[in-house]
Amino acid sequence: MTTATVWVVVLAASAVCFALKLAGHLVPEHWLADERVARTAALVTAALLAALVTVQTVGDGQALVVDARLPAVGVAAVALALRAPFILVVVLAAVTAAGLRALGWG
Amino acid sequence: MTRPDDVPHPGADAAPGHDRALDAEVDDVVETAVEDEVRAAVRQAVSVSVATGLYGISFGALSVVAGLDVAQTMALSLLMFSGGSQFALIGVVGAGGAAGAAVATAGFLGVRNALYGAQLGPLLALRSWHKVLAAQFTIDESTAVATAQRSRRAVRAGFWWTGAGIFVLWNAMTLVGALAGDALGDPRAWGLDAAAAAAFLGLLWPRLAARAMQLTAAAAVVVAAVLVPLAPGGVPVLAAAGVAIVVGQVDARRRPAPGPRPGADPGEERS
Image (cartoon, rainbow over all chains, first blue to last red; front, side, top):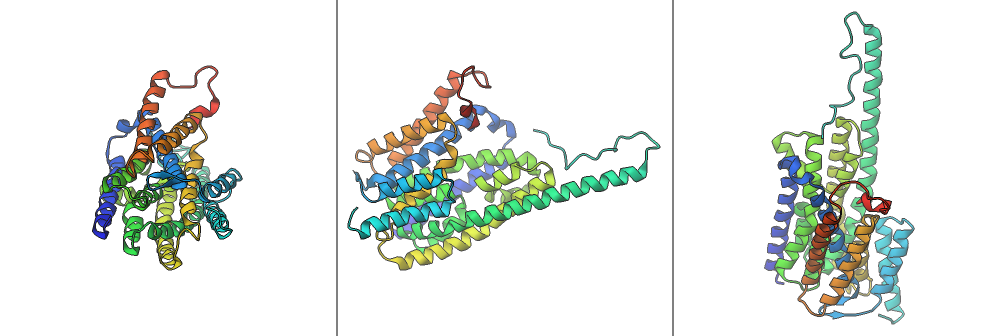
């Protein structure tokens, strides 16, 4: 993507996100009170995040690759299960991947 | 949803000739209780703001690593101001995805903020132009702190302090991270690509309490992994959202009446 394209993406996506936030405050409450809408929105959020974890962990362009990222995400999962704070989880993953690469793997 | 405007004043409907001194005393006690609740809400808001603001550093660093410049990174934190959508956008851009896929992924992740706004609207009861500012502050954390309060004053205090606190710290820390990321050199040597994956996992983790969420997330992982070699960048993630929409409809049809079914997993209702 060129710098100009990235700017268009940044501004367009920001406008969409703000419009969604504002719409929530302006529409009559009952429009969004339907349980199915709330449920589906929660499921979509989880699905998007799970897919992003996957692509970011084993994706490399159009290829699937197992490298230092996979054990790093495993360490992050253990840290999350132990209720570590977000910033620590992110740092532990980075340290794990950086350490493995310094040792010459992944 | 109706909600009392602060704690109702006992004695307001009392018969003529009631004890005014006692009334004043009760008013004082109620007033003190509300003040305490507001202070507790502000304390909660500050601790949530600091914790959330800190990981703005990781966003800033990962954004410049993904190929955005410092100004574009700051524009996202100032204008988009929604962690999930911001991380998603830089993820798709960094993976070489199409512009449309980047906007769509960030937008889909922002849909939940519309539901938060609908929930907050009646609780905050704001005038029209205040709603515009409140809309920008409507994110996971401000909604969580605001809706945890009981009186309207505490709801408002929790919402504004959390929203404004995170906005200021998130943007300041994004700048720190973006400048640091610029100076780092090869992001892989620092494990920053793995840090981005861990960031998404950290955003996902608290949402996995219910069984339906776990199954949807598992299906999304499979769909995304299968599509990475087959589809252009950004499509695997959007396809996973499609899976969730289908699951949501099927799941709703399976149980027409609200409320737990006999023998249902109790965790399933907590989404």
